[in-house]
Amino acid sequence: MTGLVMQAGAVVIGARALLIEGPPGSGKSSLALALIERGAGLIGDDAVTLTASQGRLIAGPPPNIAGLIEVRGVGLARLEVAPPAPVALILTLGGLPAERLPETPLPARLIAGVAVPVLAFDPGPLAPAARAEWALRMHGLVFEASSLRAAQAPNRRR
Image (cartoon, rainbow, N blue to C red; front, top):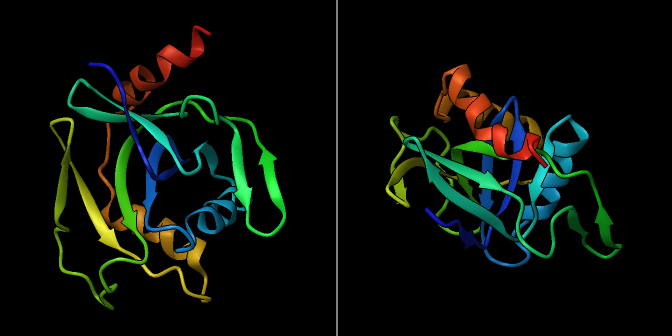
């Protein structure tokens, strides 16, 4: 399947991709930067390429803007691009109100035939990166190591 480009950011944490979506100004890039400061890798800021492969939704860098991230009020920064990774969770900022204790299992969104859990997330001022990492740990899809290597294989050939 040919990849589709989604307006969202994505970082990789422990070989799993975390998609961050929301309207302009909702804090997507700021949350991604905070996660990168904690060791995450940038897949894409403001856009990400998604491809279905072996029952997984693989997030890859976007065309034309790979490696760029907006630092609001400062400018565009260039970072190393992380390898493609399977999407484990979508955090939605600035849309639905975030629940204090969300019900589990989370609702899922079907993208390119793959169901991915979605969590309404308010980054707020209190430990947004740590809470996003916990969201991934607690609600993200878990993948076998072999499928993670397969997702990254196309990037290694470059």
